[in-house]
Length: 241
Length: 241
DNA sequence: CAACCTCCAAATGTATAGAGTTGAAGGTAA
DNA sequence: TTACCTTCAACTCTATACATTTGGAGGTTG
Picture 1 (cartoon, rainbow over the protein chains, first blue to last red):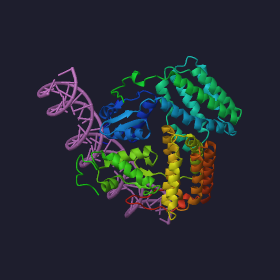
Picture 2: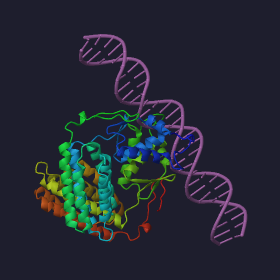
Picture 3: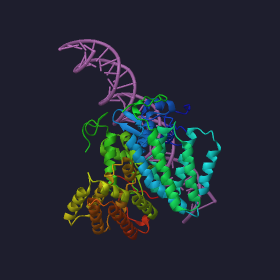
Picture 4: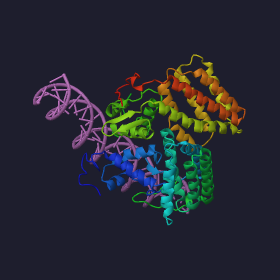
């Protein structure tokens, strides 16, 4: 609901420039899948919804473009990125296989701040709610893999990896049919190896987990993405390549 | 030089929106080290220099912020990123060691479009001009490593890696004192292994090259970055953390 | 002399208007 | 029908005006 303070020079929240608020709101909506892939964004309508002018919205969209969450076309506007094709999924898992087994090794080598306990907590708290919906599964998966990566304390790798938006892309494609029980079992194996301080076992377990996930992904992958139903979200229209 | 066509709704070049032109110009200036690290950017002065209004400049700056080439602070403006500290250099080479030996292996395994010849050409054309200045060395180094990475044809890895801006950061720190002869010799070894179709040798050569470069970097690294002289560029002021 | 307050120029952030482009509906001709 | 042209509404992109914030100069007070 637009604040009545929305006049010249106003701010949405606190004294902060509203570009930041618009950016964070849209980023969350895209990552949370509230805005579907290949959705065109109407600047003026979005600005009216948020109670701000077009300027901060446009700047927020440019930021999201830099984050690889939007694509821009001259004089045509902005749209969320497409879902990945088969090669895109392959490329993504190739990147994961380069980084995540290494990260698991580091995590297992870290004896002072070993993340094993936190990882076990994450698994158990998720496992408890056996009726979990798919949405929660991806939240767990994101937290689990992010925690391992974070334990490397390598900001450069963390950033490079996170900007690939692994979970975003996979979640957008496979939200409805994903065998989370298999993943949970593999997560437990990884967490155990890390907690035991066994770098080689942790690295292997992670590599097996990724290979397994990749195999299962390409198995259930839609044959022709164009026939996939697209949901119309809010005031946005849909685009097709 | 501002075109006389610069009035309402005009474009700098062709019919293209000027945001793109401003973005590409600034990006090149930052990557080419024309704009020094930790340089504050004045929006209005920059807009006047380029003959456009503030709006496209601001959008270009947001894009560069998304590329991690600028940092923005609320109500304080934009500035180019700082040079890396010791941990930053270490993190960067850790990322390179994860990706580039793998890329060299792929390149050597590629028998149909083996990049070995192109790499040899790149080395020879650079080696010919023995009086090369440092600036050309970094151009060569960038082209050499980029070519190997490109031969993997993995867009995801290429993008994740390029957004770390390896060469930008290293160039900004070590432009004046860098032993390029050692690097050239190692490049030759890598190119030979790739041309010979020897994946294991290519991977090892790349790993040795990176380890060697890292050792040499931290040896000549400035002890206290704050005492490093900063050049004042154009209309921009300098900032300090 | 140091700490603090007041004031103001410079720069940032936002709103708004107008210029330019796109894409589609509707009409015309072969 | 099909292909092509015209027209127009919707939207993007840029310029400009104005509100807000920041940081420092200069004076005041203890």
